[in-house]
Picture: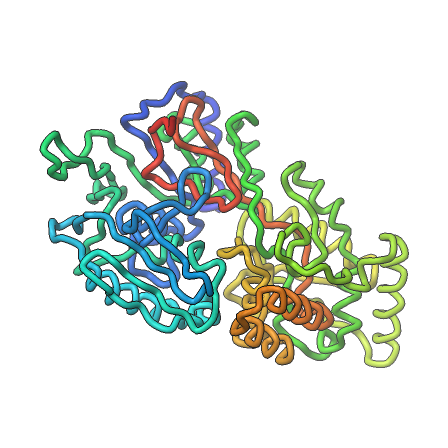
Length: 484
């Protein structure tokens, strides 16, 4: 009981104490929400969120993101893409590793090759498999040669995971040192003679669970909270955070239920479709009272510019009442032939928002004769809530996440079409093929879309360099600085 009450007592004390006003942009304090905070580790795979912020600040890749989520120069100050799209050529800045060693193209090619191999074992593997090799052309030029065009390669290279480390040292744009349980970062700058020095402004980076982090903010002990998700959103009201200080990022990605166990009830596509039909998405999302949170019924966002227009899933066509009537008949027919359905186990993250989500989901599924129980992510489960922001603007990213490499119920045919699309040089044909793959995967109802991912930050008024953007990344090197 103590573990449950102490965060709320801390929030209450913070609320009673009130908020400190104003920001010292030379001393910015940042807290990142991690529900199971882990020690900072910029070499971890996958990267915990706070470590991802730390790596992005201290270990540049060839490119990075700017404060508004656009691809920007990193180690490379400029680049060209060959006319056939088969080669990206980068010219490097004159730069040094944080330990003082000069950076050359041989270093970059070797380190990037190793990083691509390492990350290729994970969810980025299918896309990274299109990279043929990384070549050091001269002292300051690096070329990435491809097996087929990769229109979204720069987006991948800008991810924190592609920040390069040499003998444990990055190249900035900031340097960090441990400060108790936090990290203190300073920007790499140059003096009048062009020698590299550390700036005076400090960004302090900490991590903690949502209750602790919001209590620090409410007590005036931090200027920025990052990593907000739906499960921690109700704590904003408990901490009495003012609406004007809450910033939402309209990020694309996957938010919905993935079918993990396929038998006996869930092995039937019609039964999975019945679950999809029963969920009243607008009502579920209204429970959180967040305008930025929008429902979806497709695997790939319909607003994605390069997505081929395919028919919505057939279960989404009827009105809500008709959907439920149809779904209830499907479930009743299955029960009459097979007997009772045991409660389905739904794995959700911990948090007050998950309680709200589960209560609405349980009420929805009860209308068609299905009971569910909530379990934690580490327990056996039938349905898993996937909440993942897109790392690429390509439809292929969404299809990769639900491929047979990662999913219990999948479509080998869809995987084959995606692989064919990825290796074609014809961009129009690629779009057509990816549309076909999406339709194939959509028909399996192995993933039940509900909404776009929800991401939020809490920003102290007066903090410079922090902007809402479509990637949900607010890199530390821009904080406290006026971009104009």
